[in-house]
Length: 85
Image 1 (cartoon, rainbow, N blue to C red):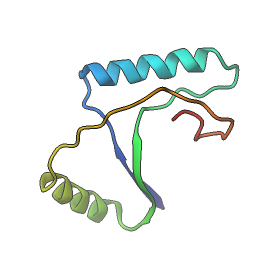
Image 2: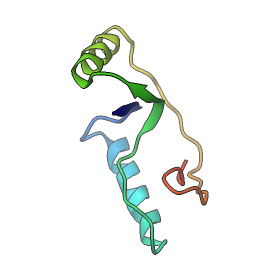
Image 3: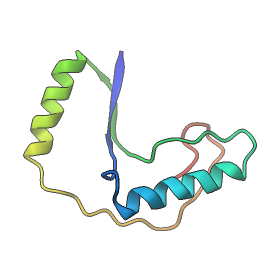
Image 4: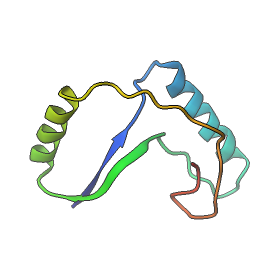
C-alpha cells in the first residue's frame, strides 16, 4: 500500500474551520465536486509498513519545530483530486 505525509491544522483552530468552510463553499458550486479534508501534501508515494511509518513520522514530528504557513488566494484547476490549491 502507498501512503502520503500530510500537514493538517489542528481541529478547533480557526484555520481548520476556515479551510473546511472554503472547501464546502467551492464544492457547492460544482456539480461533481468532492468534499475533502484540507491538507498540504509533504510527500506522496511512500511504501512500507504502516506501523513503522507511523512511528517514524511521529519521531520526526516530535523533533521538528512548528511551521508557520501563509496562504494566498484559493485557486482551482480542472485536475481531478488536485483541483484546489
